[in-house]
Image (cartoon, rainbow, N blue to C red; front, side, top):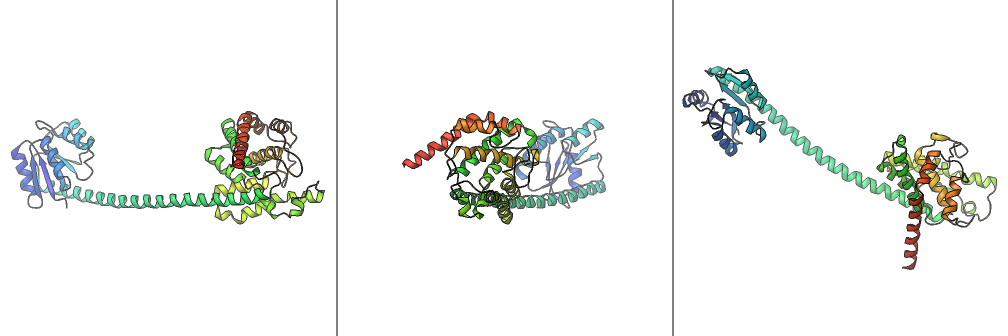
Length: 371
């Protein structure tokens, strides 16, 4: 408990006057100058309730003492009352600047000294109690934050697992081959990075691009709802069968909608956009909703071109694999439908990165096959 008052004054008589006023209610300790006072504060910091401080003293004056205490951040726990006959307003103002709590002019009056001291002690007690409560609340909030952060990491991992599991299911039923969704994900991320750099109006950033790329593996999830008879048919589809296959966008959207509460808001948003609209075209000729231009979310636009490009590169029951350079030119020449000029510009600039990624995936496949 703080019950000690430190009186700092180079005059023995002045110190005794304050000691006589305070000693009935407090333990009083005295110092002749600022240096002595600093030593006492360092040794008895937890016991001091208040300090009565003279300004003009040898070795270290009151202002230097306050400045030193302020630098050590020692003035928040108890009040410092400046007691002086000094008439200089500037000196008194400087004392307040360095953390003094009150100012009493000599000669002192007993009732006035006790009244000012009790008011300040009451104020500091309330302040310290508030600080203590605030510190406890801060610790509790930090603890809750750490817990929520751990839960968020776990949730993110769980939703990524859900997405990857669904993507794997789709991958094994996909006509384009086992690595279709893997390469679509890689292409989406590469193109997303170029879009972020070249066209900031889409407000993409690294975190968003990672989520879009992760959600891209779900783009054909609706195909799990289609019959093998139509989906795996080796020949050309009838018009009716083609319309049936096109329904995978809506069916996939319904699947994502049914698990949306298991995903965070951003994952759910991008997954819905990609699954429903990755077959939309910039000129409005796509499906299922005939969106055009920037009615198509940028997430779906990125996956759309990544999906088309990867499909050209992959072997399927419909066709053989097309070489990289030929497939690349087919996209630029509009043979896979119209894409935005911004997206095509990103595709042009990303050529080397796309090609390097394809080679890296193929090398990994060869390594796994040989092991």
